[in-house]
Length: 116
Length: 108
Image (cartoon, rainbow over all chains, first blue to last red; front, side):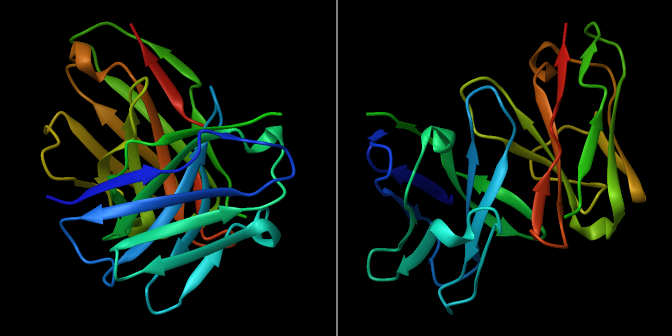
């Protein structure tokens, strides 16, 4: 059974860089497209990025200038970096697999608060 | 950007009733690229429907999806207590390539 688990700091200071990892078990990270999605408190879902181990990536234009992603095949995980964060970046961040034109497996989510 | 507008924002029903949730796209969406999710408080979204009308693994047959072009519907027949949650539609296409609707809250 595929499982995804996000990890990273729960608190980031304004103007600093948010860094998250998503560990994948039950499947190889070299297959499929992997995504980052976030959800501000009490609000809806916002797609951030998708990435593939081949290097194919795509970012939400609203975040593109601040987002970096990568895949670590040796650890079977992928990561997200979002720089110059503000309070507007406070959200639950999810990693998810995109398969058959939908997000079929999600991590449990990790809450990241941007505050000094 | 393809904007998905869900209606109603909140739907108040009782167990045993039928729920009809709407998702309207600002431009035509390929049916194969339309999905529905259920989210309960404190949980990640769960895939219900993909390809507009195919149920995901383990999803009860009281959930069904339909529609094409710009109008899509999620129907839940015979509501169970565990069905009260927030529902999102999602599409792939355009720029950004993935967008979600704002959600419909289904409450008792």
